[in-house]
Image (cartoon, rainbow, N blue to C red; front, side):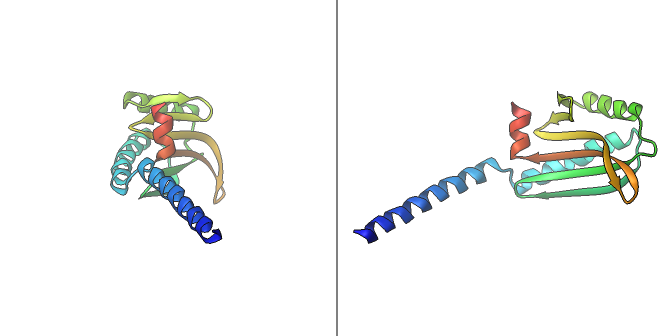
Length: 143
């Protein structure tokens, strides 16, 4: 009797685990989807950086589950006018503002965050531009 109960409990746990795993696989972007979005993100970042700003650090990757593209812009040359030009560039390229603080925009299920005064890297004051694409940005950008 105890063996039958344990077997049923194990089978139930495996079934629940399979459902959770299946849901996670269905909700997370594929590797090809992440790579496609990373290409878009690079094009959008190039448009922003065409307005000015000196990159002092960079990170990017695409993998199963999402993509990330981030740039730290040095304080030298950073201004409210540059931030305004970045925002105008985003709007002109079809991005929709979804939040003021922090500054967030969405397009094609990609979320971009603009964060002035993000901190200090290697003794240089920095400002952050980050783009992400994952299950949470898909949900946030579609809501």
